Length: 141
Image 1 (tube, helix red, strand yellow):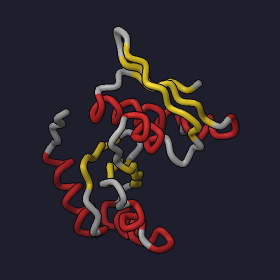
Image 2 (cartoon, one colour; image 1 turned 120 degrees about the horizontal axis):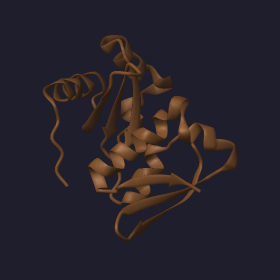
Image 3 (cartoon, helix red, strand yellow; image 1 turned 90 degrees about the horizontal axis):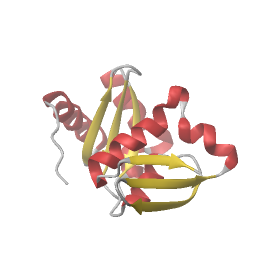
Image 4 (cartoon, helix red, strand yellow; image 1 turned 120 degrees about the vertical axis):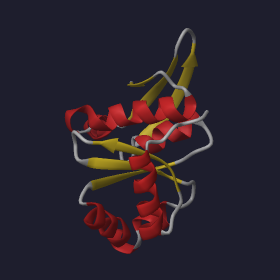
């Protein structure tokens, strides 16, 4: 499924790749929260984060924004689980009827983490799941 990235998003991806040395496949600009969410190529999270988080910290300093990272995946189930990290996701089931919904089983103690402050984490997961896999909604069970 194709995504159209704004010029700003493309510029942020270029800076991300320059600073981290890891490829990014998407960038969500969350102006309200003052953060950027990068989708990092599969297997490249360690490179993007760097030893002790130093690389991502250097990126945040350079961009003067908070940065969240989501690892890309080949399946919608794995992608949704990655988008809700660091919450412990036990299972993701995709239901395809009139709409496509990802039902996510999260550890009870991590429900707040999955939802995030003001619902930001779950909303970001919904946005990314729609952009990458045409999933209409993400619901916690």
